[in-house]
Amino acid sequence: MPNSYACVDASLLIKLLIPEPYTEQADNLWQAWIQNDTQAIAPPLLRYELSAVLRKKVYRKQLTEMEADAAFAEAMVLEVELVSPAELHERAWSLARRFNQPTTYDSHYVALAEIFSVPLWTADERLFNTLHGQLDWIHWLGAYQPDQPG
Image 1: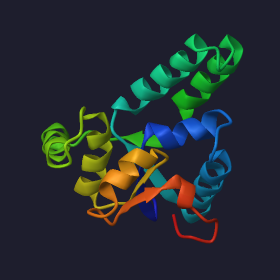
Image 2: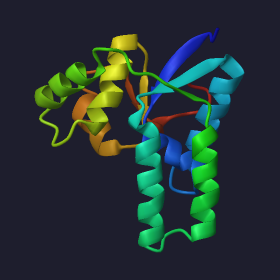
Image 3: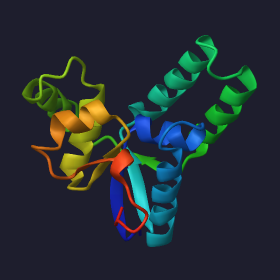
């Protein structure tokens, strides 16, 4: 049984898969979780989002097919527990309305973190800026420091 849990979204995990801004912070945070026995959790839509981002990067010629294939293979085996509590969709719908979000994708991560009372880590600065003044358990990857608890 893990010591703790943290909810992660696709924007953070994509940084583990391909070099992007904040990849170093993602790597450091992931290693801290491994050392502290923190289990990453996410809603089942995580893998759909990761594969969509990788395909889009190939389409836009930001990644080669080989790079995307390697990243996709790694994405499918990331140690992230996919969790779908019964109230997830209803809570995500409610949060999307509360924060006036155009879709419920991001709200599913927020809802999962709220349901399990765990921190949510994101590399999506816009999402963070929308929520951080109202939800003190959302964390932006860009502000992560290695000596900070994950």
